[in-house]
Structure formats: C-alpha cells, structure tokens
Image 1: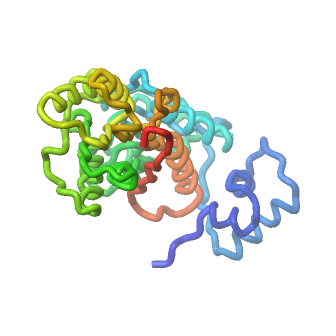
Image 2: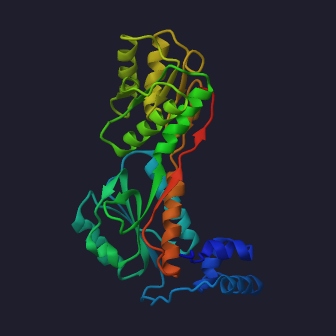
Image 3: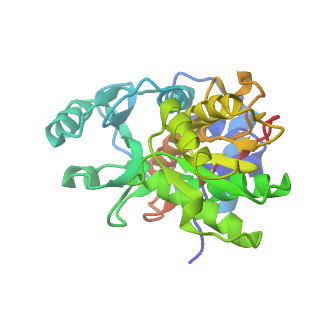
Length: 332
C-alpha cells in the first residue's frame, strides 16, 4: 500500500516548516503568510497528491487539543511532557487544557464532553508509567493518540520510549569502556520500563559474549536508598563489579555514595551509567553518563500525529517508539 503524503512531506518539498504548511492548508486567519510561500505550499501539496480532509468548524474559534493524564508526580520528566505538548500545540494556534483523571473513566468522559464544545482537534491520552491501557469507547469517535502507554488492542496510535534500545545502549557503553563484570541495579521489577531495560541489558551482554545470567540483575526501588542499599548488599557478598548500569539517575546517586564508603572511585575504579537524564545528573561528581528519556519529543510527536490525523485520512493504528539516546559524560 502506497504511503499517503503528510504535512511533513509537503514542508520538505516546499522548503518551509511544517508549522507553515499547517497554517496555509488550514487557512489560519490569525497568521500572515507571504503569497509566494502560500503558493509554494499549495503547489507542493498538489504535486504530492495530498488530499486534506474537510472539517466542520465548531462554534468556538479556539482550536483545542485535550491532554489527559492519570497521575502527576513531582518529576521533571512529567514537566517535560506538559511543556513539550504545550509548546508544540501553541505553535499551531491550539490551546492545551490538561485534566488529571486519577484513572477515573467518569473524569475522562467529563473532560471529553467539555471539549466537544470547542473546535476539538483530538486528545492525547497519557500515563505517568508506561503500561497497557483500555480507553473507553468514546475515544474511538475522536482522534486520540496514546502517550507513554499503549492499547491492549491495536485501535490507537501510541508514542512510547524505546526502552529496550536504551538498555542496550547503556550496556554497550560499559562494554566499550572495557568492563566485563557488569551488573544492573534497577527499580520495581513489575514495571514495563524495568522489564524492557533488563531485556536490553541482557542483549548487550550476549552481544559482548558476557554470560547473561539472572544473577547480574538486582531489583529494588527507583530511589537513592534503593541504589545505596542494593550495592551495599552486593558488596557484602562479592567483589566490586567494574561496570554498573543503574535503572535511573536516582539509583546512581545511591550507588555513588555506597562506592565511596567502600573505598571505590566512581568513574575510575567502577564505570557507571544512569537512566532518564534527570536535571542533577550532569552535576554529580563525576558527571553521570546516562540515557535520555525523550519525553519532550514524545509529547511533541503526539501533537504532530493528531494534527496529521486532522488533515488527512487516517493511516491506521500504529506504535511509534522514540530512541533513548546515550548522554556521554565522565562516569563511563
């Protein structure tokens, strides 16, 4: 099946931004675009065979993208979700009301009902923890993109972090630093993110011909205390490893502390990699090599997919995973 052209394709051909393409094709009255640019967009759209879906405008002149999330924690990662979604929605002249549902279907439906009185582009349905979800039937009637979660059935587009690849990249970095006795100290074992990162860890070990046995993985909590207690218990039973992949940057802080107390030097005697690229990681001593969790990019992509769905026929449900890339610093 031939892929249908998108606004991104038009922008590339016309030599303009995707934002400009959206403004032109949606005839945004609040934005002034030069006539030559406008014509270039129309010509490129025609050349690509782009067909824009006709939309019935609602009474409100304000376009809305609703943002639903089940919980909010005091985490910079959640802030990146909100900021990324808000910044990108505003570029397209959309407001982004946020509703915290606490998992209540009634709260979700109340939000949908309120947003129907606006010019609703669609809804971002998000969770704070990566997991499977079952959105209500009413979400099938509007454009909905799942963010940091995925449906048990393939009815929706979902945007997720590539956690397995992130675990692989962390482990590969330790191998490249000539580590052979590598362990993984991580958080709650039932979390999907934990399981995916462990999968990547085992793949990295196997690729380097290092025995990928279960004794290399230690689960506790995603906290400083979890990292500290775990490594202290490990060092009471065995020699210190030369490489440690930590399930997040908080765990890495605890690992640093335990290593120093046992007379080891983080980044020198023991190479360490964290995960999430939290705000403090670059200020640790030594600065922590970590894996970036691309929440801002994920949120922006979710908005982009909603705008694409509004302007063209649906390309069908799919799952998009964004790469969790290495942030190299001095600890590994």
